Image 1: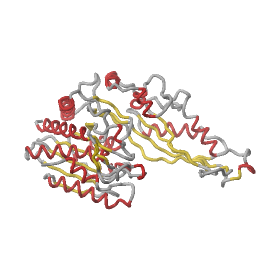
Image 2 (image 1 turned 90 degrees about the vertical axis):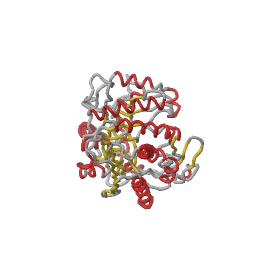
Image 3 (image 1 turned 90 degrees about the horizontal axis):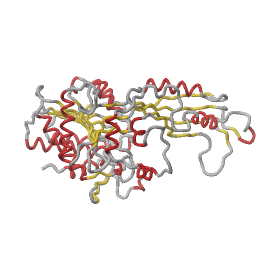
Image 4 (image 1 turned 120 degrees about the horizontal axis):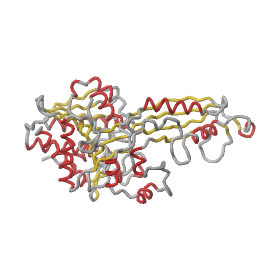
Length: 456
């Protein structure tokens, strides 16, 4: 009998931090765990090398008349730091009440285990299940899926399928399923401003040259209006207003503004006019400052004018915007506003394309969809309603998952994304956990969905 909680404990014990070479043994341990588990379930497993961490591809079923579903997950996790903030060791899973604690429990080992357990139970009941299944489990999601697109391009033929089925996204409460139908994109870059040839004594030379820190502050201050909008001509030109059904779904979620404000620990919101805070984080693009550096950063005072000042900036993008177009628009404005007396260098960082998929029966202007994708959405709707007692909510998320757009671009596949982690699961933070009630209902939901798809 497949025990998903015990399997998850074993999985979490593999300290698979992709960002740190010191965790090489844990990365290998996680690979071996996944390949061994899927192999025991009867899958043909291949470990596909990449320039860094390999991708696991496990397949079963070869009848071309059967529906073909790709189930995506990742075996890498975030670093556990700061260790002193953990109540229990991060890679020794512990159950307290309704939760299992440990790094990776919610992101993404627990959600992936949900789908593995659902498949295991189905195959125990029906080893000849008429459904082609391919697990694609990568090891670089937490470092930006650097080699995933290259993997997709090299393995395009063997990954032809009907759609992608996954859970690397969230829900709002343990009582109602959320289906994620949109993710914001991203365009990230660094700005470096250089003034004098070296750091200078601020008493002997202050007042005769533009301080790079002042220049950076003036530049960044110019990029927003007082009401919170991005102050760059053309930045919003491609933005499309959300459809009425999207606003209705968000209202039905019953989110409370005061509760959200208290959670953030802020005195007031700074949201562009015409949007609630919950709409702004889903439907609007942003330009955010993620870090400033330059000059003396230590204790006490050092009276110095720095030679350089640097800023890290990211733009979150919504459907119809593209990283390339926004890059051109933003870079042109940033260069034009560079204060005199300093020189500017812009360094591009990673980017991700926005993604949206419209469920069937939810819009008057639906995108062209394959019958298999529409069938999956309807199967999820029915299964979630039966298991959770309420119809699922269909919501966009504010975050970015670049690989979703890569799957669409390279394979032409849309994704059906079942939310399985909660806001209080502490993703990327100390004391990460996964709600065992959500896990149980997720397994039952996924099993029902796959059962229905096999009828196709």
